[in-house]
Length: 273
Image 1 (cartoon, rainbow, N blue to C red):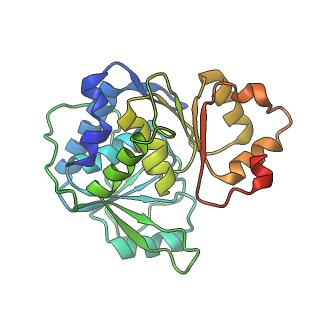
Image 2 (cartoon, rainbow, N blue to C red):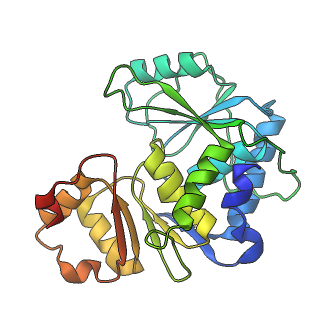
Image 3 (cartoon, rainbow, N blue to C red):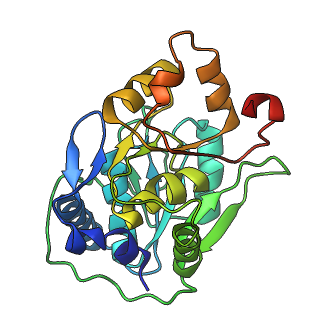
């Protein structure tokens, strides 16, 4: 099963529902699927095929989401990279994964790394003409670099079945499942598994709208959460701490939120209280 089919199933079930809203625009599930198809077509025309690795570098955005889905669409392997990494770090990671192509998205401002073909992608181009690649559950969907806390960062292999099982396990939980009427908030970076498969993937698979932030700004996030009526927060403890330290954030700011899930680091009891 191609992971993209799980994430884009709402394009058939609820095509007119808003999928993602970023600082530039909002797109429906139908439009997101068409943009993913457009990316898939452009990558295919650039010589990228099933099993090839495609590096993605940039901040969270609708264009990033369409590119990620487009890579999966043709059975290629997505390699999201940290746009804040140093040129040396990026060079080392690119040398490790040896991608067939590099897609540079908004949020990356340094010069393009040398030695990797950069494919210019129009993430707003739409098409319905590219068939979804058939892949096995154990085929690799994503190579995601670890944080390197226990040594050098390593490119973890994540299969289509692995990531789909993660999403389905959450959806099957009474405590964690997302429902019609929920609105997500994706501020965690998509080069991290928590942000990529929970902040982005789970929201898409659940068919809810997700508000996308290209970076976490405590004050800006408070405004978005209140303005958009966000109901679901996926956070790390430092985000919660920053909100506590923000004088204009209070209980009324978060009154729409029904579920807040913290991960990636210990959540101390003092912070919980």
